[in-house]
Length: 256
Image (cartoon, rainbow, N blue to C red; front, side, top):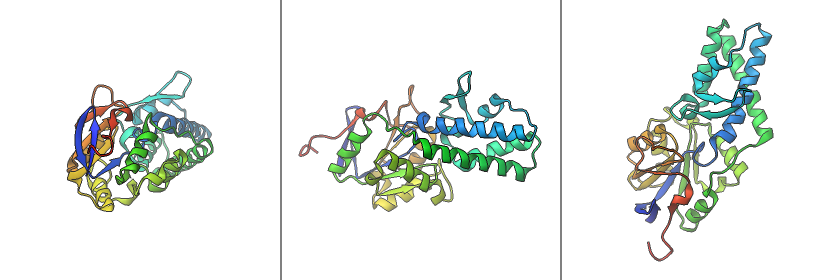
């Protein structure tokens, strides 16, 4: 048993589950770069087919916000870009390409090709940035032998790679991506699988995430505590809301 202090309140837990994007790493830094590349590849691909590109018609489907000259500057935390899987995003964009006149098979092929190109550009850039206070908090968890796992809508291989870029992958006993479950967030399967992997009960587990989908998953799985991070104005389903990891702490050794 470990005592976790959140906003000064104490909770007894045996482990922690973390969402990845927006929770461990800065969402906009990583996925903003990916989205900018993806949209540009889509624009070029459609132009080659004689299809006019109207950017707002595409960005509003995913819930991404952009500067006048194009770069992504924000996103809707309730939208598919924030909460959906890569397959969700692919299906939404392919649906739009289909409505622009492409046969469904060609629409899927175009979006998948653009997605692969965007991922390759991300590998070159490595734009991952840890949230403030994260490294300190993970070290404190390690000092207490607290088991940790990641539960993410991203694919497992990609998630592990992003955590490796940050130098934090070794902190997690398991990384569970959307490809390892039959039903992704907000279904509780991912959280339950992570708890089973760590050998802990959901009722003794904290979950940290940045979207309502994370909180819904945690509640459905029966976790002890749901913590919403970086969510101004609160987060539906969160027992506690913090701006960053500086609001999370442990009692000094010998006091818990």
